Length: 452
Image 1: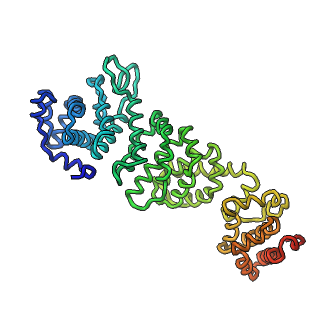
Image 2: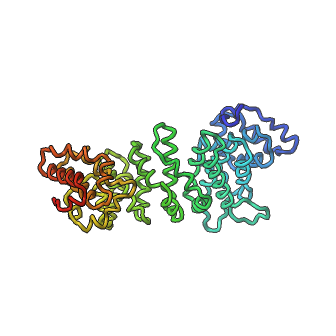
Image 3: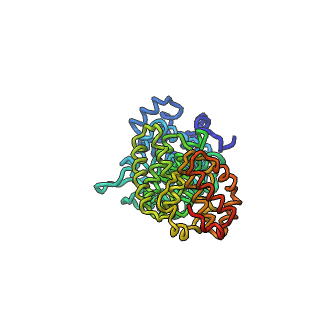
């Protein structure tokens, strides 16, 4: 059978020759007794044994993984541990019991991450993440697994474990061991582990952030929504860590997050993205970029929806306030862009300010004349006479002020749209449509005397 498709249930149907292992001294008589009591018993029976003697069973399982290398047996013991933790994740604390504090519980799992088939890798990763997360935080001089102790033997430290895990997780994101489960397993594990400072710094050092960014994209299936949620959860955890923020700023993270929030209806996805945006808002140029990408308008439409999550509602309010503050700090052209992108065109002073047009006309070339294209789209889509009049006027100003204004506007098929507006019922619209057409036909040289 393909090991990549093995299930815990299938593995646990095997019969493992424990007596043979005792005969060859790979396990002790005590181990054999414990295994006979536990193996192939009902869940309630096993549960009682773990309640009574949990640390002893953990020692047996870890010992087998340390000393026995037969693949079927390694898979079987990993399946036993996985089943035990799936039934009650709090049992991960058994690995940190005082009676086994000087045993190297991490080493077998860390080794198996790199040596085993996919079933072994996936189970080792999952178990390691649970054990690491369950460790008690050292206090009052107590020693936990992976911390310094008086033992003479070299024990795998918690930092070794976390760094080793991160290396494996990044390797999975780059080149998954399993075509469909490698990446989701790695992201799921990271969503738990990125709370750890050591994991954050190792992940950034290994260039892990750029491996996550392509995974931030709108999702439709249940499986892909869960992967997207856990990816965004990772980005949220990284948004508290300055070196990671520098990576996020130089990648396409922000446009991708905004695309996700725009298209997602899943509340938990929207919440984690909104909280991430709130964290990034005050960092570097993120605020200005968010305004540029039309986030203020998006926040308005998100606020109008019926969300039940209080963190999400609070996050939206904080984001709205922060974006307002950012808009106040913007240059005149940034403010103008905002007005156009939001479709809220009005006769604010800059539209008729000759200095504004002289100083900023070349800024219209940004992003392949994005702002000009939006103005032309407004002519087609807006039903607000004021917005139509201002859009016609601004296009006429561009034609007059830009050296190639008439050619560019003609190429973008604006002429036909403006001509339709010359028959508009609103006098303000027809007046500015006429001005625009005159400038388009006459060119800047001859139309400079035409003023609105």
